Image (cartoon, rainbow, N blue to C red; front, side, top):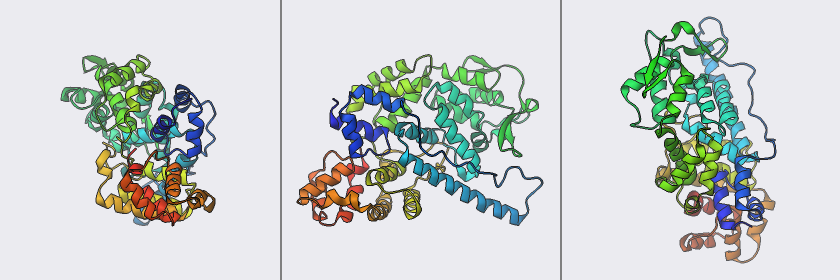
Amino acid sequence: MADRNLVAHLLRRATFGPRAEEIDAAARRDYRAVVAELVAPAKPDTARPLPVFAEDPYFGRAGKLSREQRAAARRAAREQLTTLAQAWLTRMVHTEQQFAEKLVFFWHGHWATSAQKVQSATLMGGQLQTFRAYGRGDFAVLAKAMLRDPALILWLDGQRNTAKGPNENLARELMELFTLGVGAYTEKDVKAAARALTGWTLDRARGAAVFQAGRHAEGDQSVLGGTVRDADSLVDVLLAQPAHPVFLASRLWLRFGSGEPLPAATREAMVTAYGDRRDVSAMLTAMLLDERFAATRGQLVKQPVEWAVGALRQLGVAPTGKSATAVLTGARRMGQVPLRPPSVGGWPSGAAWLTTSSLQMRMKAAATLAAAVPEPNLAPLHEGDADAKVDAAGRLLAVDAWTARTRAALTEAAARPQRLITLALISPEYAVH
């Protein structure tokens, strides 16, 4: 049997928010078996797929749009994107493959493509499906698929990258933010990589990425000492660099492990597991099994979406109607909206989510969620004395222990279950895990 507190820590990091019964069940198993099931679930994913839209407001239209048509297209695009975001929120709450979906959310922040510019639910939904399909295997397969992803191409101006006029945006971010990190390449490498990526553009009639040979810069390009001719060979050269596995391990550690630097021994274990197969699942497994991961409790601040989805799961609140709107509105006011990273660098981390204004927005969202909790789920908060009710709130929200200061505040609210939940949701023990 696994240590319950250790398993609770694992599930807080590897899911959007573990329920008490999920922790109980995992604690009855071997820890390594729990990790293996999280990384590679044995059961098929039964969660409802994200919606597929019959037509895109912008693609497939002949001729220029009138002012009225453009306005209508913008409205339709916003409605589709809202529908997609709400559907994804619902999937985050309900899927049994929690770690797989949380990894999709990680890749969304890593490749940081925003609907603010893309404006297409079809393209954004397609990118999420790419993360889901390839995000746990060979990273090279994912990277090559992303260089053909129409949303990323549009987001980073790949459609403007031609042999006659290379655009360096995608090439630069591919090295700096997606594969290698700052300082692992030169400006000469960026220019050569941009030429290797020429030819890929966006077919606006179909909303798809296509390769046009006439736009491609012919001949070999030299990138980081390797010879590349196209997108695939560029990926192969980049991933062969010693900086790549270290960079990826550090990014995964930042989001799943700790805001503190990746320990050298953990880095070595993760890089070794990643190996020549560039196996993302193996790297994740090495991280979750590492003894230093177990020592990272209280070192990560929940992102607003993690906070909101976790609360929905643990409180048993359905992510529909008023609750879904409140969660998305609350997340937006706290600074994070699915499908809309603020920049190509993705969302911030750590104390950036603990500002005074963020706390005020979290308070409002917490009150809305507390008011929507089904009455049966409040039953444990009606039983026993004040201490018992505060302990019940901790079990409900997967908080191992309250500090004396937080317990005192919760004890004063113990007679009012909804108030107790509201305060528990905005507590440091819930916000930092």
